[in-house]
Length: 96
Image 1 (tube, rainbow, N blue to C red):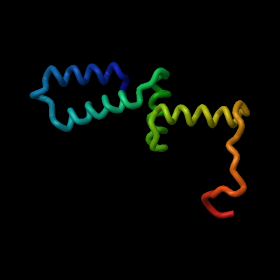
Image 2 (cartoon, rainbow, N blue to C red; image 1 turned 90 degrees about the vertical axis):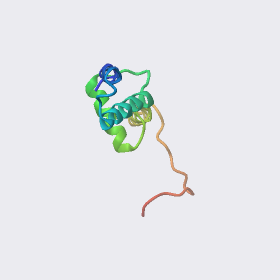
Image 3 (tube, helix red, strand yellow; image 1 turned 45 degrees about the vertical axis):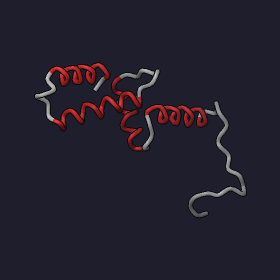
Image 4 (cartoon, helix red, strand yellow; image 1 turned 60 degrees about the horizontal axis):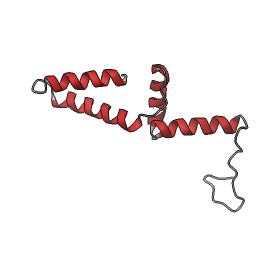
């Protein structure tokens, strides 16, 4: 659902507030809150936005944090940034 679709749904609900169910109103308000929370200056195509939303949900991150993560990983992998290095005395998870 695009931002425009969300806005139209909210306006329609406001016009018929007495007729709309509590559950539908909750869904619309949560979608609006997510859009506000995850909105950013970078606009993507709908298919990319959907993939970002799904990935952010899997990672438990916001949209913007997910974009930062993807860009950093890509830049490290393509040697535009140095890889994160581990200290020899630092703690690590797992077994060697």
